[in-house]
Amino acid sequence: MIEAIGVKKSFGPRAILRGINLTVESGETLVIIGGSGCGKSTFLKCVIGLHAPDSGTIVVDGLDITKLKTEHEIADYRRRFGYLFQEGALFDSMTVAENICFGLKYLTDIPSSKYRQIASDSLALVGLKDVEDFKPSELSGGMKKRVALARAIAAQPHYILYDEPTTGLDPIMSDVINDLILDLQEKLKVTAIVVTHDMKSAYKIGSRIAMFHEGHVLQVGTPDEIRQSTDAGVRQFVEGLSQGPIKMKLKEFEADEAHDGAQRGKA
Amino acid sequence: MTALMEALFGGFGRMILEASEGLGHFVFLVRSTFLWMIRAKIEWRQTLIQMSRIGVDSLPVTAMTMFFTGMVLALQSGATTKHFFNVPLFVGTVVSFSIVMELGPVLTAVVVSGRAGAAIAAELGTMKVTEQIDALYTLGTDPVRYLVIPRLLAFLLVLPLLTVVSDFTGIIGGLFVARVKYDIPTIVYWHDIIDNLTVKHFVHGFLKTFIFAFLVSMTSCYKGVTTRGGAEGVGKATTQAVVISMVLVLVIDYFATALLNALGIT
Image (cartoon, rainbow over the protein chains, first blue to last red):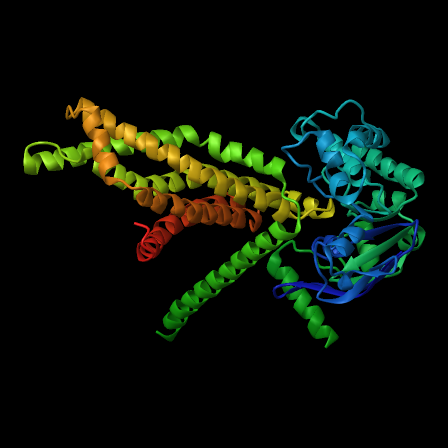
């Protein structure tokens, strides 16, 4: 189980997370939705320890991320996670097999003689075959996502964090990746957090959906609860409307003025 | 007037703050590099790959640079002594002293920073903006351990060797001009060198290469891993890495020379 309590994170003067309280139950797939810059990816990076929260804490299986000190503790914590980056983040200089097995050397005690088999097995799980010796530059966008997913699951993590898994893919390939995520959930019985803008994807793969807005959690609920939400902000986002309480930046100054106006209204 | 002063001092103040912040981050990177060197296993495979890229691939360009530098030194020193004494004198001495103590270490470091330093900054910068460096963290290793240490070690091992080869090539370039242009016998050229050049002179130049290797590799790695933005950011980081490395090599050369002289290694 992952429990985030009052997580705050700023970059310079910009407050990105302003107190996130969120629980991810074991075995579920929590989808995080929200506009660009609302802190979804930052939260994901806080969970895996790429960013340290300014305040608040994240507890995973009883391990408090803010209290991890030694290399051993940090490695033990990271071993629990697989992370799928938005653009895959495959290492250009390595082959597909080397990419997939990279983490095994650092995260596990598996002998290197078994790496090749693990690479093939992981590729099979994501529906790929005979691409072990290809370089990432020789793969299509969808194949890169699959290889990145194979790399994320190779060390058999308990949790998989997906950062916009369908971004940049055509609708059919997006749905294939959604099916793949569902398939992996069933086969590997892992807990997952998925960050996405894609509502179709969110409804399909999510056990629950959490909507982030301006560094806060606006609502958490099942896909049906989110679909029928009465919250104006949630409704605007899931229906994809430009008009509503969430001011997107058609023109930067208009959004700022609208935001200032809203703040004055609250005051 | 007040606005102008504010803009002037404000800009200057910001520049100082940014430079201080950058220096702080650089020192932090150096500190964590040494800490990782002590507490983790060295990635020797990566180090060997980097040694090949930095050393073997830079060899032709550094050798050619130093060959022509030796040639021009011989040409100039021969012409000058001929002007004063009617015969070209001590060509081998001038060429060897200049190359072994100064030009060999400095020019090799400058050429390698332009070639390998730029490549390091561009590679690490691209890895940074495409989240490959973050991926290293999630896959259980640290970018300093996996990326920075092998490059630093490769530079420390390879730059001194490259400099020795450069020194030799430069001296051969000088010999070529001494023979062809001034008709100085080979034996005289070598005697000019052997009679005057001591091991201390060689050590003087050789020790400086370790300082340059450290400066160029750490600057290039620092600029790479702190790259921000997309393609433009990578370009900027690469340019800055080369410019800062070259300037540092030239500036630190003076202080290193002064220190070595003070220690009697001259």
